[in-house]
Amino acid sequence: MTGTPKPSVSVAPALRVIPRDVHGISRKQMSRSALKVLYHLREAGFSAYLVGGAVRDLLVGRAPKDFDIATDATPEQVKSIFRNCRLIGRRFRLAHVVFGREIIEVATFRASSVNDDEEEGRQVLDSGRLVRDNVYGSIEEDAVRRDFTANALYYSIADFGVHDYVGGFDDVQARTLRLIGEPEARYREDPVRMLRAARLAAKLDFSIEPATAAPIPRLASLLADAAPARLFEEAMKLFLAGHARASFEQLEALGLLPELLPETAQALASNKSGALRRMLLQGLRNTDARVAAGEPVSPAFLFAVLLWPAYCRALAQLQAQGIQAVEAQRRAADRVTLKQVARTALPRRFSLPMQEIWLLQPRFALRQRKRVSRLLSHPRFRAAFDFLELRLTASTSHAEDVAYWRDAQVTAPTDGVAAKHQGPGDDSDDGMERGAAR
Ligand code: ATP
Ligand code: MG
Image 1 (cartoon, rainbow, N blue to C red):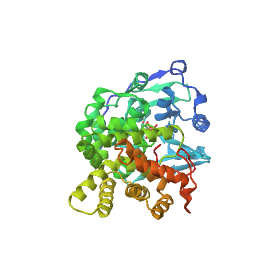
Image 2: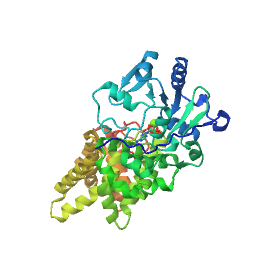
Image 3: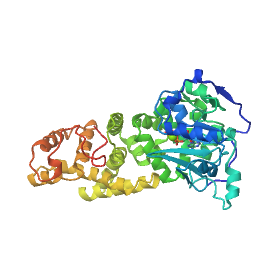
């Protein structure tokens, strides 16, 4: 999809060093493994910086998810310094330094590249040397090829200062997300940056600088060319990292929802009462609450929530064509799944339980003794019941079902595992069996 990348920032940026007493980041807040890597690189005569999300997160007082390092050492040189090191990646090689369960990613400064994705980037060149000559660069080049100014700050192990080439420090202080370079060109280079803008604004509670936000609705359709597997990864980060509701609202505001969840966006637009949107937002709030409480969340339940409006719409259409209920449900589930998979490559291990959650919903209306015990012992019962409860946000017509099944879990004698359960809030199941809701 890509031609020769045009550099979006051509002037050599000026360096500003923010000293320790101004930025306030202390080494105590950093991973000990990351510090070891920084020190060893420096002792070996290389420059070494903590970079990216970690510096940004430390500046706003959040605990970083991971600690990435940038250096002028080549991957091979990094490997020669650390015994516990392996090189990964073909187009752009990265060093992973392994400390037990922690992996510190060490990247050599690189010149502007189209995007960060192995598969999608510029064409793989067959000569290793050529790749090296074209890809690695100076720290200035490394800074300006990053997406947002807040993501392009370098904490130096040599002087403990934060090195800023793009005005990122002031932007972080102002809680502003600003693209480096000319926004439209940067989105055209890599449309996923639009989703990253929505996600990071939601996660950090930053506002998106007007010139960075402005082109997004107009360019949103460029996401059609992004790799579905990458969009799935991005969806996981948008919705399973504790800021799902804020992410969803950002996606809506920026006109990105029709690109990421096309069928749901359509269904929400035609649901005049707003009931489906209310339910979806409640499901996302519940997901955020579970993440905040350290409880497991499942992609299957999440996508059941995200695609429920699409499923309801497809079901109504099929039934209007005279297709009988059970068959219509199955077909609606398949149709919605198929269309979504083309956009975000939802793996089957998630789409199958997602469909089960939907297809079990009508069974809550059936109360014969045998059916009750069978449903109670269904492996997906708990997630399906959580979903039934969530549906109360949109409609109370099945309130009685919810009460009945809440009761049934405590009283009904069954031989299945789900019977010896568990009041709401019990968390002994694994994340896949349970809903993200509650
Ligand atoms: P998170 O805290 O969610 O991990 P992050 O900013 O660290 O956020 P990563 O995906 O881990 O995001 O990327 C690490 C760094 O790589 C970013 O901070 C940014 O500097 C750079 N980067 C990532 N994706 C892109 C992109 N699409 N275009 C340019 N730079 C990118
Ligand atoms: Mg990161």
